[in-house]
Length: 415
Image 1 (tube, rainbow, N blue to C red):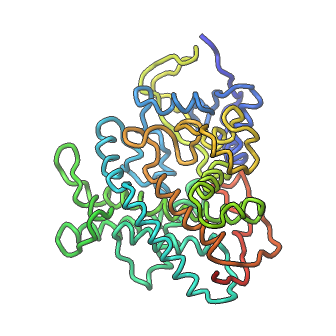
Image 2 (cartoon, rainbow, N blue to C red):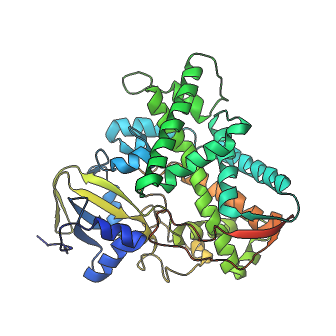
Image 3 (cartoon, rainbow, N blue to C red):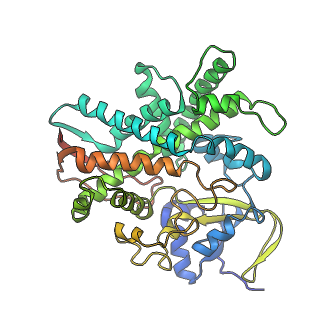
């Protein structure tokens, strides 16, 4: 039986936070291995990177998600008792509820709503405005997301709800006041959505057909019982919150357009393939969510390495998206690489891997791509702007990572 490399020491949680997205890659390079053992939060953990590791990690016969996500993250980013924490038939039944919303026509509707909100913002800015792209994208996507989900939102509450939704994905790895703001935001958002669920069930609110608020409020579990109102709220937020988080990717779209002007000319005319290539390469190259966790279901052996029941295993998203075995010149921005058929559900994992329907790959990935394509069209073709000198660096130790300037655009003009 092979002994995997082991990081010596009592605990390496501090190192993980200090090194951020590169923590696992740095150890892979040190040990010349795509997996190693360490200790995090006082617990033995196996970390894995790469396509083969992804194929293993997303094997539902080998791993479970129950008990894997830290409470720190559940109380901010994910919510408790949501689909990400379920396994087996219960997970598949709940996941089907999400997949029902991800049909092509419904995704196209989200794209149209996103375009409507870009148009709204262009009119609001007027000619010659100066903006921070990341901040403005948050409101654009909040408005589009709640409309798509069937969640009524009064105009006066847009700034408040936008800020709360952003706090959900900006606070999970924080401590102190920022973390408390994240937990407070989740509590308020869940209470708000749960109240709407109650209104739907009592017949006082009728969301549009096919929306998350209506679909989830009417959903029944395997025992034929409606979901608890708070759980429905968690799942509705699992639709809305990830859409708002695409604002991070939109900031990186701006970053890529500024730093790779040679790629911009390929986007003229709004042809499908160049847009899709640019979006996918942005999702591959830039940091988003760094990794995911699961627990070993039962003892097994893989590549002569023993995995013991209940062991926590972390799969490295960022490192897998930069693995030279799958992505030549992985740190270069090369959208044309997606002309080639080298993408698989296990080597391209910006939002997780595996199968959509029965696995834990993010059901909202198609929505992400659509929103990014629409936003890229506005940034590349439908508006003009000047780019002042600014700090375009971004940290790989802060999670999530955001360009330091948040991408400043000056003298906005509609094309």
